[in-house]
Image 1 (tube, rainbow over the protein chains, first blue to last red):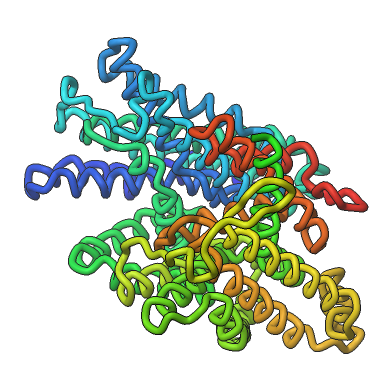
Image 2 (tube, each protein chain N blue to C red; image 1 turned 180 degrees about the vertical axis):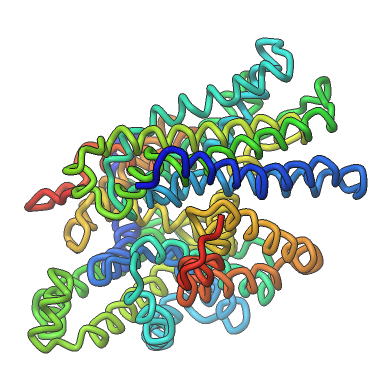
Length: 313
Length: 291
């Protein structure tokens, strides 16, 4: 174990050389490049990738239904604004609370191992979607007809808010990489029984990582609702978002700070260049890429460096 | 009304058993989750629609025609992709993502070739009109689908418990390291299992346009989840368990559709979560799996 001083130094180094430059870049870019919606999507996917990194990268639990937290956040925001007349900033915090509550409800699932957890989590997210989009609940959730929040629309403020959630997610990952808590999570990932005998409370550390991860996805989901202002249940509960985020994270390299960001920048750019014309061609390439990635580079691009002994952030 | 729902539930349950049992075989033998299983079912459905539209081929004949090609595809996929996947560190997790990729490729290819619109076959393709069963009348197509499913499930049972290959397959299910040590060609057994699984998916697919009303390339994922629910409710690796799970699933689906129709599609997911939490080893299991 590194001393507290070294780990603090490493966190500072991550902050100065990765987090601050990237956050600054995302804040400056809108004044240079006019397509703010595209930039917002990049920020959103980067945040989701880091949030997934917290749970998948550090505990090895694969949440196929991760998008459920994103959708819960988006609806938490929308319902708070519509029914409780909250201000957007307050509703943004409410979105985080809603997704943490959903995370708490799903904690019993953490008992399941491997694929059982992944499938159960996917089923939970589908169930949440089906409940929200049920026409019988239209008076509350507007059912499948979608939400419109034009009253609070304010793209520049919500964009800045999204970048701050990105910063938060990067701080969380940096902290996990350089703290005793993060180390105990990784011990649980490698071998839960040995970790337990070494005095790590397996259930507790997993649950904490799970809730942090849920909270980040809920916050960015709330900002998404604010920024987009018109959306449908099938766009915020789209299982494709879960998988894309997992693929971005794996492509770059999980349990690193740069990996998920690299994955989003490379793959989401590729999507925007190729995917707009004929979506099917992109879908085929995307599928082939997933298969090749799983077979030949399951630990991501960053593993090319780490397996040669370099320490990358 | 109640009796009608119960019998319809059994018919649908048998059909979902057929979809689930293929997935069950792969999970039992290889400990991999084939998220593309539903897409293979949809492929079978598209062939049935296309052949009927082009030449008026009876869907039952299509089911027979699909058996060999689907088996070959399964064997090719095993030796091309899955064998390598099985060597990796966390094959069970990676399989979820890998097969999602396969599912995307198939969905996109189907979209390019056939378009993304819904496809269906008029029900007279299988003989029109209702059929009487225990005083209630049901579409003939449902009864054919349930009958073929029952035959297929029995065939899988006979294969696993009465043939030499089946015994070897069960040995691999039990413990593949020990199977290797006793000289079983595990790769061959796994390839055959994947082949059989896709064969079953193809047969199930032929009936999909009738049982689901119509099919689209995007419907595969929902079918995969339903199939997973069916085999988890029963017991992984046990064909009779899959049948029990399928019938429980079918009956609850029909009861929901009759009495609370707008909530019916939440059911597979809720049932799946509930069973995983209360009895993760499934209803027919002998011993507790450590979860």
